[in-house]
Length: 439
Image (cartoon, rainbow, N blue to C red; front, side, top):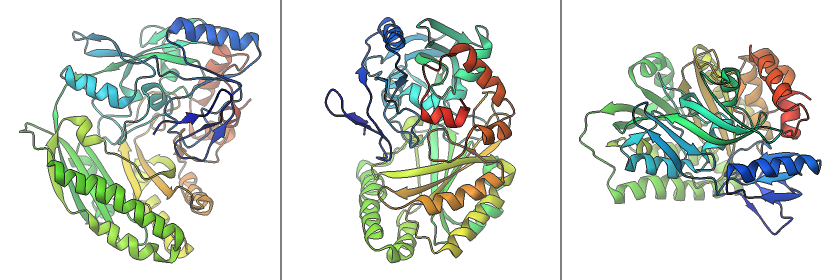
């Protein structure tokens, strides 16, 4: 799943296969000191610097023709503070390894996204999130950060120390410095009961506020060309543990959700006219099920079918209207969409450029199978999202620029002023940051 570079001057590609770059050199530092030295050396050579995690962003946020920093040696838990219930972890640690290590210690994050291939720094820097009524993104659970800034110095920040940096750097887009360690709030491991069941889209939209209010974590997938959805409700449970039996899990999560879905997408890509019929079958393939397990085994699932994705956060109050407009657009467009549309929520948070900054949000994610033309679908969807002052996920495809962001983020100027202070020479700049933050 990780991104790869071939040879010394190899080409780097992201997971979605839609972004590539040819860095001048790659560095894999084994310590914070080595990372700081690499930044200073890049400055001497007049090169830009970018860190890249697992390459799970669909934007060119990590692309560089300068120095590519790979953090895979900066991994593992540094320390656990049971009194304050925090865990400090190295920036290159994959979420998968963090989740397993925390469970072993009897601990868990409160909320997480639905895949765990990313590194902790890559996931938080782009605003990766799951769904939650009361609990926000992974970045919203950060209590402290350590970063190497443009002059090669190491800066630590929290609510008490460098609070203005802390406000922005939790979702820093790689623009303020290179994150080397993150301190997360954790809690004693708990059980979640997941209830997955099909539900007509009309009913989900009619009852959305209720479904949101009654569940700690509510999400649903709508299958375009159908009136069908799959809903998922996760709530805390007193137990007992009742995981999905192994064979059933393999059939549902691997064979149907990945294997059969892959084949369906191959057929759809070859013969787009078959997609609406396939969608009817796909949307009914997964039957209702209930299971109880520790959080990461409930929140996350394998995603082996490669795709490209656009996701926007709209005000939660605008979700139902936005989704109705999206459905009407797909119905009249003649588009053939083989991937479900994913809908999640997050409460307002206080992170400067978080997609949920200062407003309760709902996320609508549109996907296309890798290798199929996605521009027309994404452009039409984006037009609907932006009409509702949508904020695109920083790591997913969008066409917005600094001028747009200055309108939909009240604190946008706060972020750019901090960047001027921390990176005056734009050591961490690339084409993507130039577009979204301005020069």
